[in-house]
Image 1 (tube, rainbow, N blue to C red):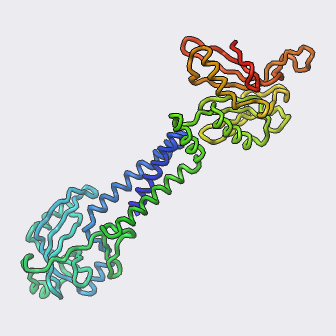
Image 2 (cartoon, rainbow, N blue to C red; image 1 turned 120 degrees about the vertical axis):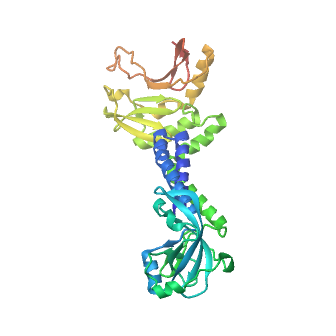
Image 3 (cartoon, helix red, strand yellow; image 1 turned 120 degrees about the horizontal axis):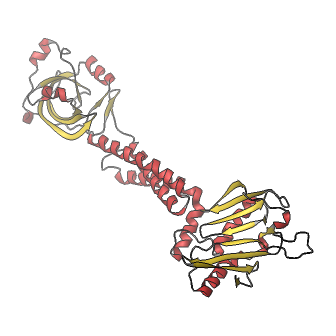
Length: 386
């Protein structure tokens, strides 16, 4: 189970990295910030568990069952080795044992167990300890306090030389439960390893997908942007801008807007709550998602400031920027376009001096030494510097 958690966290971490790269970075950092320590923690615990593969897992019930069944004996410690692993600051040790059961043939085995520092003298080579034999025939044993064996029983038990008895290996990663060996949900040996790796891969991919799927649009745009050598799409270009327009118009619920701001990484629109209403919200398209930021900081004076998306040739924005940049001999850079109605100059009009004229596309191209502003008609014609 810990391995599944580790691979799920690894998949979530990879998903978070993808989201950081092509989606909302804050979300990606949050996911990665949670997934990374979980992955490390689960991996460390898995490695600790692996190092304890030969440790005998015996519940108090299993030990009591062995006592009740008189599966008792004497074990001699032939060797004590520290594995280098510590659990709660106590060493995990490997013990070579030779066991003489009360009933049955003697056998040799090797087990791992945590030996408290204060108890190490009790496990020195040649030391004999009473044990409970958890299953008939061994080799799983548990150390018990002296006194379970009657003096007469204890006196007749003689532990033979290790070389004269068969060696019975302890099956790794097994616990004794209800008189039976129980292994982990997922195996740990060579048998079934390809299947386990496939399962781990599926879990990791599924976890990554859960993180990334909400931002699938950003991922798709990033894949398309790779053709231009970018990790994210340039929303000023026709294809990406058309997708942003579609998403914004769908979220807003109508096609009327007061202003449109187009940048490489985002599109901001101020749109009325309903057509003809002066109450206006601020909408933003970024990372393939639309968010409503609530009321716009500056509300329009009249509904005459509104215009339709179809009134503006947004597919001409990038070409206009390139033309303007060519005129001044500079790259387009981070230039952004702003679309809003021009000022009404008709002195006889009731909207004179208000933003009620035909929509215009404006942008600036420059560098650290200055910039040049450009304006064009809504259909993309009449580009002029000002």
